[in-house]
Length: 435
Image (cartoon, rainbow, N blue to C red):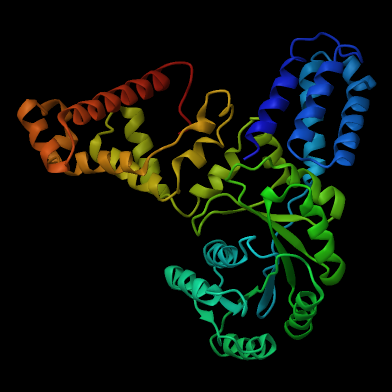
């Protein structure tokens, strides 16, 4: 996400590096580049104008003029202004209430139903909640079936009464939640191709009946500046508590994220960053600004790892790496844990200078990981512990058993040895491993 805009901003800032002093003349070109980068990313014109004026005013201020490193201070100013546009502070989801009721609204095709499942999955994993999904989209063909299928795949209950009136469904769903001790209710509502009076009247009737603590608009990040009109249209009638931007993993310019909070004062609470049902991330303005500027997002990586990676096992493997005792048996265990984190390319994009190193365009074929796993599983325990004994005949047996080739087996062994050597050098050199 934000790759194009981030590249343009990084190039503009690069021209400032090394300057002993910042003046209006020597930042003119950089400010022009930043302005064009934001406009081409579909950031609202008024937002861009304010952003440029604020950065310029602060960059030409006394604090920067007196600084020993004005270029670094300029970068900090740009980042701080991005954080301001994105909303400054993280606005968490309300999880208090008995039960807590959340209502998802939005136009047709925005991804409400899938997002409902993602939210339920998030609440169960992150907050140990017992969510109930309620199917209130009684118009879109297969909407109820879709929600039931999502609930089934997550093992999360879905309350549905088919095409009955939404008020009847809500009333009965509240009773069902009480009887089954569901402490969080997520209501999936109907959408339209555009905002109209019948849609708003139905949504208001749900609000009056369910009295949700959260009314969240799900909006397609690829809409561009039209998103602002949609947000304001819903907010005028329903008083939104937040938005969720979907499809930020796609080919989106991302400008809507920089305009939403500033123009509507409705906070972004989550972003959809993959099609999978765990592809929902809390929105942190500070982290997002860092990612836009290619500074990485280590905290979000840590969030993904938490609760997925076995901490004791990871510590043991780290110790073995440092001592040079890490073998293919350990590597297989590492692979299995990595797979739990979801698509590897999504993790690589969060590393510092990912775009500079080309990691933002890396595509990791799941089949490659499956081949590696098959090769190691075709080895005996002794061979995994001591790969040096793998001669020609053994390699042929492993290749045949894993459905791969001897060349692939040799490639894996070579890459594994190179990795071990790199770790050894890091451990013995000036760069120390973080364990």
